[in-house]
Length: 250
Image (cartoon, rainbow, N blue to C red; front, side):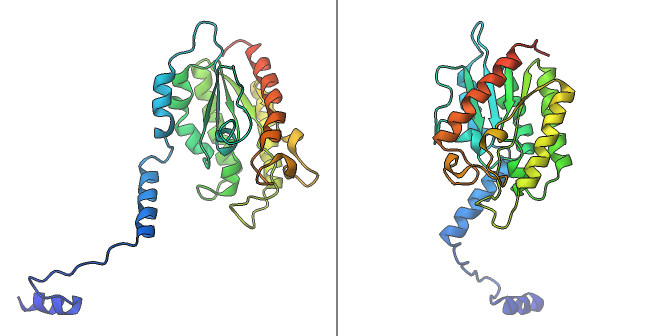
């Protein structure tokens, strides 16, 4: 028993004694809870689960369109602009997400809703920003190709939307994403041609001379459209949807 006593002395306790541990600081506990919650549902399947359940199937002749994306989609009609009033369009954006998260919730948030078409919207900017760690163009390509394959297997038309322009990310000082965004959009456009998909070009309508978003079109002057920005994007999306619906479902 002597070795127990010695270890207890080294630890500051003796057999039979207990030591109260200091309570975690509220901020630290809150951060820990947030991280545990995120790890438990990394793709955030819980976000739209109930809305999807209550939405039901499209009505007869209804061409439901799902917009799948990150913050630019998420904020459309919720923070700025109007999200296609009177149209059977469904917003399934979640701020901060990378394409691997979109892929993980594609079945629940797209396929189960039985849309006529899906717009893979602002998919990729958060990859470039490193929101889920370092990312490459090849990783982005794999996620896009996988989502297109799932959509086709379920007879859903696919519209590939360009990444929006950005010369910097407010949440990631030091990043210079303009060239990567141009490169990734170049691949998206070429892939759309090869696969006979509709390419939705928001980029050209919003870009400034240095590859960023025109500051008057973004509420943060950098990445996220304001009402004026969304007003430019809306007819472009409608044109792409009309073009997609004019072709047979896969």
